[in-house]
Image (tube, rainbow, N blue to C red):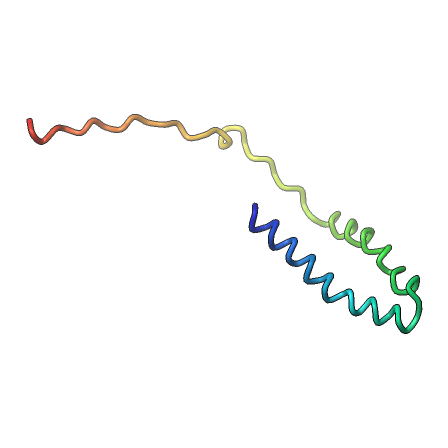
Length: 80
């Protein structure tokens, strides 16, 4: 879970680092409002893409139980 969180955070920071100069260049040639307006649609686009994912299946109750501990076999004492 930690690796998945790290990869997700790293990807978000990387994309932000790539997009920032591009948005800045658009803002320099036009206006800040024009450069930031497309960012309003990004949450809606993310929500639409999220809707295409399948819901994960819940595990069966029988397979969700922890394994039963067994007693080790007694070892014969070789000195006897």
